[in-house]
Image (cartoon, rainbow, N blue to C red; front, top):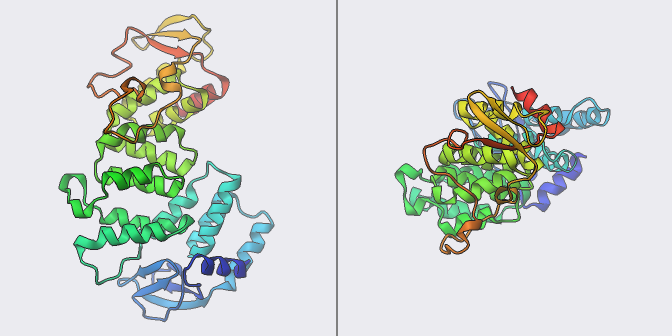
Length: 357
């Protein structure tokens, strides 16, 4: 197993790890080479900087990893525990491989991507002699050359190098063309990066697209990132859209929207969930009052939001009526209608609502 990981590392044009470096505080990280006292460690994915926590021990790479794989084969670890154990051991190459493998069996499990990103935030891929004004250009080219999940390491530093929307610098931002290329990419890591760039640069013009990705993206980690970015760009508009979806969207979309209302939409999101929960077990055609609101149970979905449309080309205003129904007004959707119209709540959605409230 270890040999296959090393061969994969070579195939991806990254140096093969040889040892595990252990810092004074106990952080473990795989290294191409390392020595006691080092204040930076050369990993297969960049330099791990540890000036305030130098290397205190160097161990053989395979001494513990082979044993971990034996435990895995015995069923000792759950999927989340397995990825967390690899991360805690500093086995970055194995974490890359196993995150991808785990996703094939557990497509909704995103912990591996988050663990890789946490490591990426501590690893420097940028050559030290590149001046600030050219860092974004260099990082973007380097990022595009990466493959698969290894792209996360370059993506993290690229996002960190972007100037925020409040202090925009053209040479330190991704262009509209570059953002569009990322958001419409077939690679979910690139879509996730484009979403993070939209948040960093405060790209409100892409709100419709970002909101659509929060519902229809086929990769759970990109979809969750889109939801987080939607709330960062304009929480009010995101909440309005998710309330509409939760009330009358397609069934799987309703489930996503309900989870976002619970975690990303603030107190009003929780209020909307309570209203939706009041519709559980109500028959089609029922009309009633709940928490000072009128609620009506209907049969048909709202066709305008069942299939979110992705719009990348904002230079064309044609077919505006097919765009996502974004509400930029201050009023709340649940307060601005004479009645909240809800499609009958199916069993699984009812269970989800009960669990969240």
